Each structure stands twice: as structure tokens, then as C-alpha cells.
Figure (cartoon, helix red, strand yellow):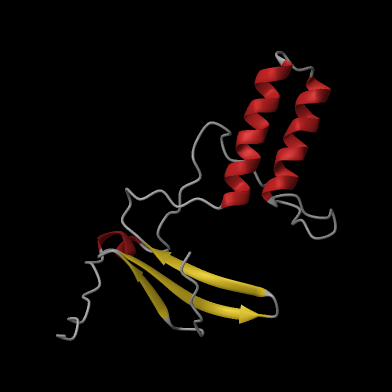
Length: 127
């Protein structure tokens, strides 16, 4: 594993067309941005594990009662970080869990991000 130290605004290049940017650092939390072609799957480990666990649980239990299905949905939402305390949830907004069978892929923040050309790399110094 390559371990790097980066500051906000600094980037990491992966291959010719993937750019990781450190956006913000607050306490023990780091916000990063990933700029990659649409065809590249970008998945958060904890989300993928929660979906796999929910799929395995559903396949092993067979047919679920309505109560069990609601409990399984609540467990999946909690694992994905989609549940909010009742006081923090907006009254008109609802949050839906992603399709458990679909991979969690990132979408560009803007349409321009999908068509952005690869970031040019400086040439390596001659030895």
C-alpha cells in the first residue's frame, strides 16, 4: 500500500485519467473528490459491504414478512448512513436506499466532469 501525506487542494493521479483531490480536512474527517471516467466504478467499502450483507441475509431468509422486510431495510439504511434522527430529518424530504442489487457508483458533480480530458503529467526527469 502506498501511503501519502496531502494537504487540502493537493491531488493524487492514478493512471492517466483518475484524479483524487483532497478537498477539506476537519478533525478526523477528510473530504476527497474523485474525478474518473464514467465507466470506472467507484464504491465506498462500507456501502458495498452493507449491500452484500443485506443481499446474503435476504437470500438466506427466503420470503420475509412485512415486519422483517422493514427491519432489514432499516438495518441497511443504518449501515449506509442514510438514517437520521427524527429531529434532523426534513419534513418533506425522504431518503431512499439504493437498489441492493445495483453497484454504488459515483456520478460526476457536473456534466463537464464527465467529458474532462485526462490530466497531463509532467515528463519524468532523465536519469
